[in-house]
Length: 61
Image (cartoon, rainbow, N blue to C red; front, side, top):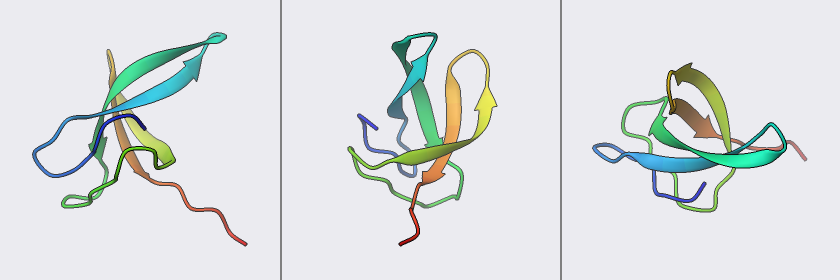
């Protein structure tokens, strides 16, 4: 993630697509959630043309 995601903010994520990387606008899936730049996120919804709804990605272990 390259831009902060949070209430009232439009963040930015970089997504590997077709052998390259593309930027998408990002909003938090959970209202009020803040996600700092550099965090890994999971895309849980997508609205064309370039808006993604995300949540923080956590790994077990």
